[in-house]
Image (cartoon, rainbow, N blue to C red; front, side):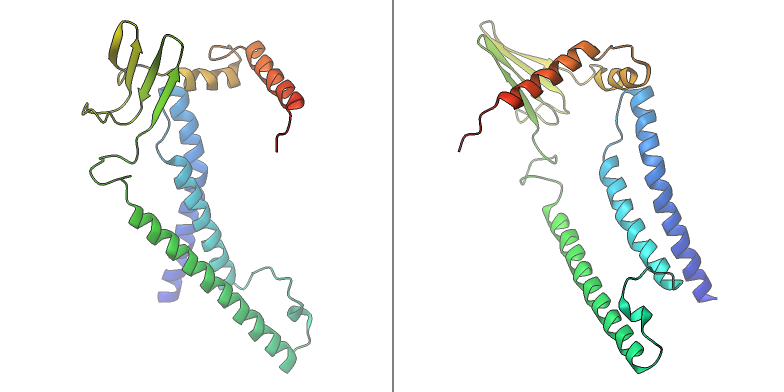
Length: 215
């Protein structure tokens, strides 16, 4: 009874991980398409689910005796030699699994110790900024935090001969992602024209071809 329950639990967890790997990208496409927004952390979640699926798949295959093997011990005749070969192979596999388990545990501990803050007192995971510097001034975007104390994210600062101006962009629509998906699916060329894309690619290839390696 207990073995049947454990087997069913393993199968269900593996099925949930597999379903999550399939559903997350579809949900991401749907969200970007109709809401113009991504699902936070979907890439990391999908990567973790993939690792879980690989681990659970290996465990289930071992449980059912269906692991693939290239060991020559499988081709040895039954008897003492074959038994010794299987014991050696199992020992090596156990050692490798132990090393991987210790490495995974160390990675989890390091992520946990890192926390969600870059430094003490900073109430976010980081300070992301984009600065565009020109001859007559510059523009700075503070994406997720303003150290000056304004709440929220998407802060825009413009500095030029007229002075420094602040623009709250937290409610400004960001259509580029949605328009780019539309360009890929329906070819309306709203985010970028194909001519512009081909020209940028051509210039990059020309620059790469004519570049001089220094050092």
